[in-house]
Each structure stands twice: as structure tokens, then as C-alpha cells.
Image 1 (cartoon, rainbow, N blue to C red):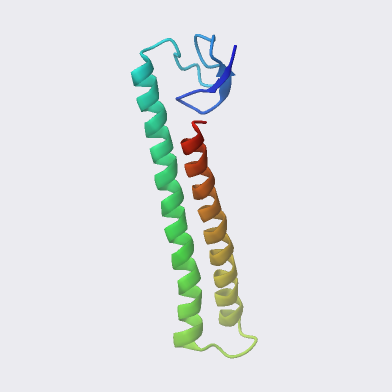
Image 2: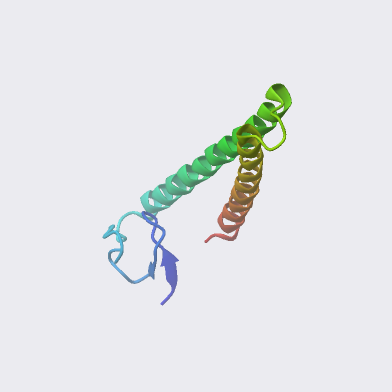
Length: 111
């Protein structure tokens, strides 16, 4: 008996189970169809991560734009907000890129 990922929700289930205990998806169907469902789920997850990465980059660059064009005075509210946008955007971008790498690595390893 092996543990596999449900193609519908990603929850770990036994390969002998007829349905997923988490989402109640039917695991007894055509293996080609189940593989397609799993591929579509990973594609959607990958696209979501790429979109988040772009939003983080826009936030990061927007913070720099405010600092460059508006040139807020030292200690002002605008300076704090733009510095926070830079920090949050950078951290969000790095974390999202790491998640993309981990997703690609898990797909390559077949998990």
C-alpha cells in the first residue's frame, strides 16, 4: 500500500482508497483523466504563484517610484509607507519565487 496525492485536492491518501477522505473525489476513474486533473491543478497553482510574484514586484517597484519621484521629506508618512512597500514587496517576491522553485521541484520528482 502506497500513499499518493489526491489529484483533486492534493491531500495524501492511500492508493487503495476509492475516494479521497478530504474532498470525496472519485479515485477509481480513468488514470489518464486523473493525471489530467492533477496536471490542471498544478498549472493553476503555478499560475497563481506567478501572478503573486508580479504583484509583489509591482509593490516593490511602486515603493521605489514614490521615493524617487515624490521625494518625501525625512520622517514623513509617505516615506514610511514607501519604505514599508519596498520591504513587503521584496519579501513577498522572494518567498513566492522560492515557492515556485519548490513546486517545480516537486513536479519534477513526481509528488
